Length: 303
Image (cartoon, rainbow, N blue to C red; front, side):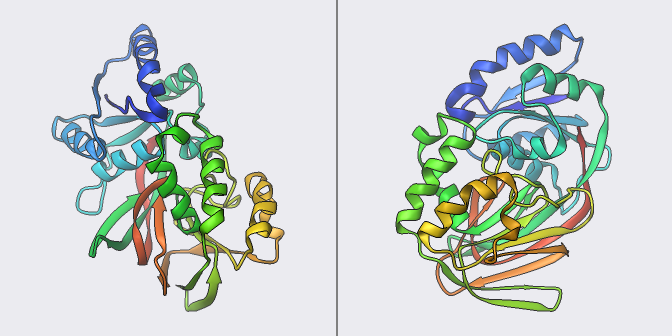
């Protein structure tokens, strides 16, 4: 078993917790190697190195961004070796995939879950988008969002002071900062022969249910049904959006007239007339135009 630890996740909180996690695993008789990430993107390199070394359980110790990097390292030529499984010991600003999968947030509970070695097969999403003028491919395990959500994620990732608080608070701080200047986008969302055109605040493509430290954005999404849930937030005004944030966290926003839910989607295309940033698992990955494709039954997870 190989553990890939992001010591700077949650402004260094994961690094401080790591010795306790290591000692608990050793006390439980676990056999493992561990390596600490040193820079953005390093977890992807370390995951591929772990595969080359023959490890078959590779554990992300950190937030959703760390999990995302490890997942992208495990995907080789569009597939994950069926003998390989992902483990998660959650930390970082958010732990939303772990929340969907029922992995405990506390260290000892997460370690016990990992050592039970019960595996669950989940889907992944593939993103084809534009970054710095070129086409890029990226995979995600949880939720991708475009528009307002992408701008908020960009601000969260650029501002270490907000990440220092961890969980929901940094997202809410950046949400209200972004709200001041954000303008809704003229977008076209296409899937299953449908084409939706108009001004939109955000578009979410969901494999999991939660993002942003507990926002229940896609209450009906299942990470193992081979399908996306697509949530479109329409042309919200600033005060209107602010007034409904609590409903989105509770998962009761689907009754709002300007919110539309589309279930059972395998491929989504989003185009925009203005810059429309994309986040995936909390990490900024590029901008529209973009295509999302489901990769069914793609990854074993210890959960």
